[in-house]
Length: 493
Image 1 (cartoon, rainbow, N blue to C red):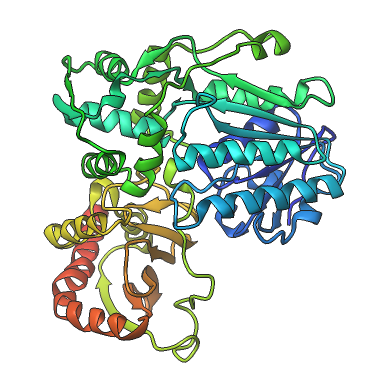
Image 2 (image 1 turned 135 degrees about the vertical axis):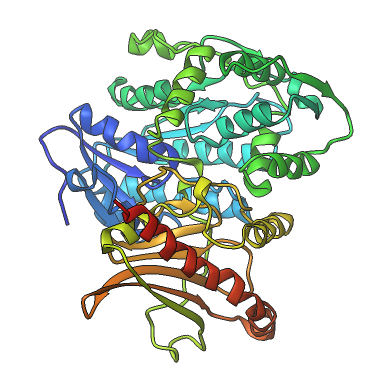
């Protein structure tokens, strides 16, 4: 395990596998900090370019596991954990995690806590997610360690859920019927400014314990944001027709249909727009002597440029979809945790192993799955209809994958470069499922191998596998054939 390097102040980053946390780590390193990351699954950080420069502690803010070790000697702890996907009891889970973290930070005599919350008006009936984030801020501030809370509204940056929602709505709908929240006033802020302010928050006077609102240079309605985005992207002016009948639930389903953001993630974003989200008191700039903010158009142009150049460092989908901790791994023997159904395929490929691996690592996203496109699309839309992640999360990078990346409705669980890619399904299924793609040299020839694995839960799980088995020859068989053919084509002189 690599240690936190350097002699600067020691910063702990929770949520380092998430959108903000994954970008904050290199910012802190560049600012001279020693960085320690707390992660439930440290393997998800393995392939980040900054991994060798930080210390990683396995732990969990809800159970308290590893917190004493993670917080030991810490000068500043960044708390970047919240339940975006929801769940039946996310409010109490978030509150319990905050209390556990606050107590542990006090016991470790941490210097300060910095928390990124949501910008919302005071004294209003907030949505459950916004109320939960406000409660977390109060819990952390009530703890024994001085806490700086930064509250931001819509964050504009490549890969953020808010930006992806805005981008896809605008690009795909020349005319749209929208809820009344498109008239709410919002003060969006560039992710670059959010990251800089998070780092600078540690330079506030010792003992500072208060809430700061942060925003960009302009206050806009969501409708104005749509029109400004269209102008920056070179699109025609959009027709926006607000109607009073779309509830947050219906709005989130509509957003999930049009954009890659699934309804479970879209709902808190939509609910946060029901009220104005405008900076109430702007004094952080004076305290930090930091007055530069990117304008909305500049932030959008920068985000689009990074997308065009395939330089999206982290995405909203970087955070893992929840799964049962007791699930077996596909590498376990069949008797471990119950029966496993498998579908195995292998093909001899007249191409170097490197050519096969390039096809494997480039799978998904715009390239698709080298199989029956209609079947994959239909499975994704069915998943979206039942509250799953849906088919269109795409890829973070078109050529390279790393552990923890989302890949359409899969997540990268393991990579052995040149040999194995293991994906774990994040679609709604009656049991966990994996897809393994790999390559090997056998008796002097290149062999592509593929395995689909399903661990059924209950009778429904067994019936599900039996129902889809007749389609495996078309879906998985053609997938193996087409990947082998593509590798052979790419290897031709």
